[in-house]
Amino acid sequence: MFSADINLGYNLSRIKSNYVFAQKMPYSFRINWHRANYYEQNRLNRFGFSDFGISFIYHDFRDPVLGKNFGLTGFMSFYLIKPAQGFQLSFLVSQGLAYNTNPYNKYHNSKNQLFGSHLLVPFDIGLYLKSPLIFNQWRLRLGMAIFHYSNGNLQSPNYGANIPSLTFGLVYDHSPYEILKEKHFPEYDKTWQYIGFLRFGINESDYYDSGQYPFFIPGFQMEKHLNYRHKISLGIELFVSYFLKEQIRYEYYAMPEYQIDEIPDFKRIGIYAGHEFYYQKLGLDIAAGYYIYYPYNFETRFYNRLGIKYYAGKHWRFSSGIKVHAINRAEALEFSILCKL
Image (cartoon, rainbow, N blue to C red; front, side, top):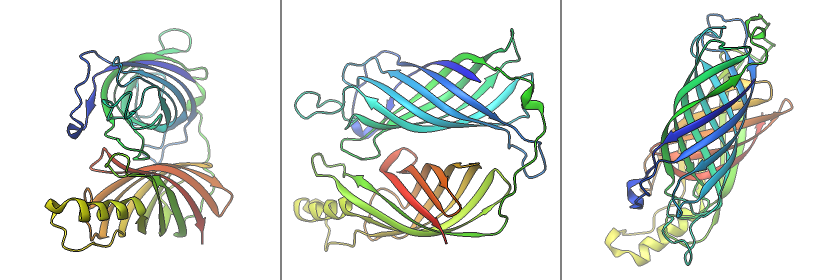
């Protein structure tokens, strides 16, 4: 099915940025392609009805400092009631890549502390209500959504923007009756699986022009299917982030007011629990973690991760995702290689 949405909202940034937005309401529009993915409902698959697809999004902040964003995202919709020809209520999560036309520049655009690079990682969540068919295969769609843009600390500054929005649009459902057909679940492994992984990337501290440094996150997790669609996971990981090593050294030598008596270890160890919505070769991965080894007080001890995973055969998986603290404080854009042991 195809749909198009217009989104109206207002800008929110992290208070620390001290940026005053232009007093104009930003707007955006999004064009979506969905693929329906409905199976017979059962006791373990109460909310298993879903769509997945891709979206093109255009966002105009109506602020010359911030410019405009053009993006391409992947999304999944989880239906909260069984899809039918009547009203449909769904919860949507999406993530992708976007291009900002006017990022921070020391000489030409120093006021834009929200976006430090052209490349951004958009993320949004929303609750949507679709009407019954109004004519032919067309439906109306209304919703509430929160859009978030940041570059995952790929480059500073990176305070990001959060945009609560009301959305309205049209959906063309070219096969409205097919979603009522029952299908059989494919076979899946019901045992615990053991996974080794390596996450990696580059990022920068909040100190401007402090330089970009690589990070590496080796780890191990075990995971299990609850049913065909849903997985749970438990894991442990070691964070080796060289930007943090340089930040600690800088604060130790240049900022005596921090009262750092000795240079602490920059490495961290975290444990996490996660959930994955799985379909064929794609997965939407959400996890919450806690540092059990935390020698330096950086952000908070709790962290979250949202990523998209691709399954390449029985043993190898590849993913990309964003790791954040306090829900909206991005630390890193991570790329991962995972191997089933």
